[in-house]
Length: 554
Image 1 (cartoon, rainbow, N blue to C red):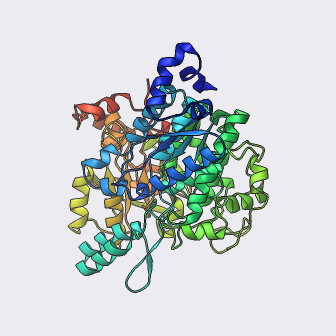
Image 2: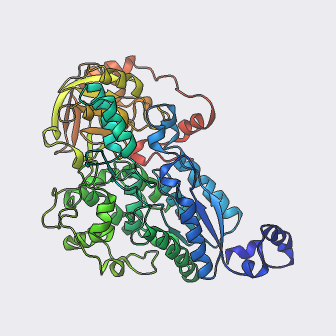
């Protein structure tokens, strides 16, 4: 056991004395010591129940003969951080979480880890740490939020809440209508109820083999979530006994499975940042440009919010992630030989899965669309690619050409959008919001929601070197690479330039000649860094471009 480094022999007596100071008995010290990484805090709704999950995990560890010891991981609520400087501190926490968990795990020589994340950056951050530390590890998330119900009985969620603000500015609902959403859009603890980034990543934790069945879909308030946590605590002991490590599970084939399930579920575009970053830590390289190849042969089987009007609790009742994977086996799209945290192969795991609602999880033969939920576009505006959630784009916006409305920050754009100065046909361009330029690559949920809420979602596109919330819908194209601050062509766009978007054919073109672009580049100067001190300044110096997963380059 790794923990022998801190508890066995006379030379380790000082270490044992400190374990004794924790109240551990000799009997507890003799057992495998399991680190329980808890993301509990009192500011993130998706994490407010994790203290209960953690206690259940620890009960499971003890029941199976281990000694659990809890330590924390930070978390940011993207919804609360949205629309102000706080959003600069969202993506950057992914690396803080990975680094701090690595430090705790290795410093204290745990024999195994149970990771308890829930929201957007905790899941990938802890998966990165798991791959890096590479000791037996299992994931048990806090679970998704229940859908809300407005006063008139309509079901609702966080994406509707943000769009309600746009509707208010458009004059289509009053302040009382906005308050109806405030009171009802987020009715319980848990990660917000649609197929947003948190739930996307928790579902992909199942697909990649690091979470037990139901990890991504069992609602946070249900007792089944507590039972799942106890099972995870017990299962880590089997992983320790069999010495099954994250890198035994997170193989190239497993990441391919995750990308395929991503396309079928219609996950958040943020998965295109997180999967490459996690794979990098596992010694696997994911090429963003290959996403279209996977999408071309993977049907989109689910339209959960924001793409449709169904929610995570519905996916759980329909059979969950494993039911989606079972449908994909009809096309021989998955490698089912991969190992998982159940101690069994994926083939064994999904053998009994059943699709209980073919309206929610479409049969393989009758999908929502023949290709997957995400598309990568390339062209002179984004030579290294950009990303769109095509399953959430209105049919009439799959091909669109219009004049650029150019803004150098999210704040500048939102003022103009709320003022009603964006017109049908426009292409809103928000630049200098990328990993380096932001710094921190803010999500643009406020402007995209404003566009949709004001009735422009079927006539206006938005392009940015920043990123989008999983709650975003419409022709919202993010992760433009190279980003503006690095001299990408998005920095050369001028007001009124024609931009042609063709999601069907995966292209994005700035209709300006190479000669004119060369003139503009000669006159262009890099903007002054927006932040010059502290963690964000260090992050900006180290972070890679979005097409590489915004990883920190050492």
